[in-house]
Length: 381
Ligand SMILES: *Cc1c(COP(=O)(O)O)cnc(C)c1O
Image 1 (cartoon, helix red, strand yellow):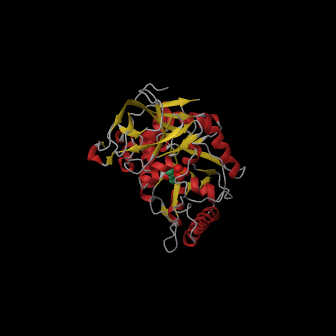
Image 2 (cartoon, protein in one colour):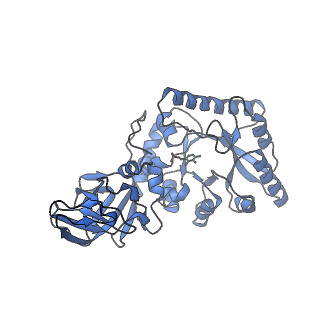
Image 3 (cartoon, helix red, strand yellow):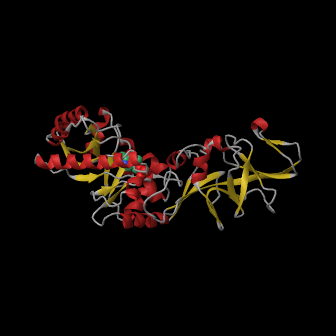
């Protein structure tokens, strides 16, 4: 498998396991909308979508029309919802590829309706109800409750609103304030659904929960749940407690080759800035992966461990653009071509994306999406 200097292995067979873990949490009447935006968080949108389809997932969420068209051009026929904004000059692609557009606000919906009228097409859409995230959507909150805007959307002639959703902003949190906030978001969403029904509209397909919404509020019974991270087998941050205990298997491993091994003497220093000073005779392995592959430079000099020969070894010195160095003094023998695991398993040992995210002060969502395009993705079926 080690054709390149650095590569990511994606074990698609584990997606089926993770999907079943999600299904075990949610009501039997709820279905999964696979969120495959940002190239499925760096895992490969087309490959992940196909693997999810094979598990019976029939609805996908992406962030943009370009991502949706990429799926269509690779033969994906399932429903696709664009979760974000599509610029008006690309409205034509929505009808051409039978995509569902999120309505970010009423004036946007009216523009889309006017376009569809002019083009003599019907464009399907889901309305976004903003219950507190304050990102996109019609504001339906205390004091500013614009149900009339949602009703106007549902009344449109050329845009067919066939669903409605909202988004949690603190479903990962267990503080009293945040629990109350999430409970209120649910109440507001319920109120919107009741008001639509009272006005004679069928709200259509309903969905609310992202990954933490599923993990902490699994009892909610909307038509769909919207996991991204969960089918990839990770959460945003392993230290955040969750209310359920699913058994997810991470599907991504990040690996690279040893390119050179040498001994250094006390007093020698390693890498830019000379931050690592050798104190005892030290065997150093150079590895062909760096920050231009997406490994954050911020994790340098923090004693981060990776795997080699099934054992934990430390990164030493500053991470370079294309290379980094390891202290392999305790390992015998290490040679050029040996495979280093930066995320994943080797023998009995495992290093998680979480350690890299923690050391670089971010969440796994960001670390995974930042593995760059020059790292080939290799798929295990
Ligand atoms: C990204 C996104 C999701 C998926 O989030 P995860 O935390 O990865 O599950 C769900 N819904 C919306 C609207 C999103 O933007």
